[in-house]
Amino acid sequence: MIYGYARVSTLGQTKGNSLEDQERQLKEAGATKIYKDSYTGTKIDRPSLSKLLAVMKSGDTFMVTKLDRIARSVKDGIEFFDSLIERGIKVNVLNIGVMDDTPTGKLIRNVFLSFAEFERDMIVQRTMEGKAIAKERPDYREGRPRIEVDLTEEYNAVQRGDKTVTEACKELGISRSTWYDRVRAM
Image 1 (cartoon, one colour):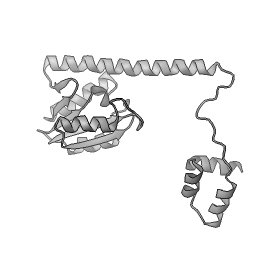
Image 2 (cartoon, helix red, strand yellow; image 1 turned 180 degrees about the vertical axis):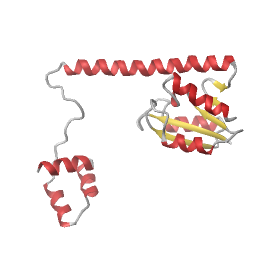
Image 3 (cartoon, helix red, strand yellow; image 1 turned 30 degrees about the horizontal axis):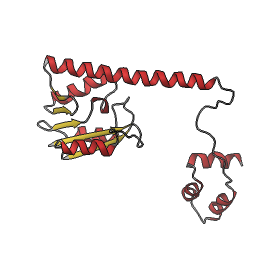
């Protein structure tokens, strides 16, 4: 069986990296079953990927659109691809080709994984630089801006049993943790 895997860091990713774009490319390349995650690329332990790894067996094909959809570090990528190849699973990275355990295959895989790790490191560095610049502003505040809402009406409805906390939060456009933080402050 040919299994496809698609991953985004956030559901808002676009420009060829959205889950829909990856799914389309995987289907066009012959994937019959596709697993998807919205999860950081810095961790290899992801819910749908774990499920996929559990069902694949020797003779199956693992397909992904780009190398960085799997790993953002050389170490994690090598371990991941080696484990599949050792299990007799064919690995196809659409923008590179079939991964194998030949010297040339290992070289190509390691070079591309090095670029993926470099790209991730550059993103982290630029983010840290941007935060450092932002912290110099007198109005700087870490985190998201505070949402100002009046809980009174919704709080009373929850207390009367007319609504659940979840329903009240949905109407106010806040999370449950924000709700409880604000209720404690009342």
